[in-house]
Length: 198
Image (cartoon, rainbow, N blue to C red; front, side):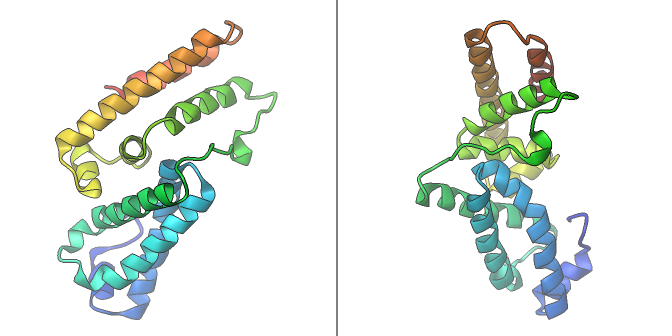
């Protein structure tokens, strides 16, 4: 169950209660947008995927069999529409830094590290980005991520392994190509990826 919704609200929404359905859609809009942005790496694609997901949730919620599977079910729908948007618009576009990620004298190395991780993340396939986003950004367990994606836990573990290995390789290649002017940036990146690979 999501943090903003209780089981009763989802039951009521499933039964056709308009106020409850609106609450479910509002919760989904907030919860799913950042996840869509991480998968698509494009604000417009994420917006479109979320809008399509909200329409699908609104229409399909009465058919949901298990209320306890609502969150995983909504992630599966979102994942499908993110993939559709990426295919329809010609695949991934370059990630845009958010205003809080712009360089400043107080945190230049943090921005470099974050940018480095973003580039490595953006190079992943949509399937690999989805697993990393669900596991590390949403904090889902392997079995929860598997349920959300509609794949086995073994597939999640495999995709996560290859995604993290690919990110490490991208970062290593980038660091070899750049003069050792900011070695400190690799320390945090390596730590984050090592911790992620546990």
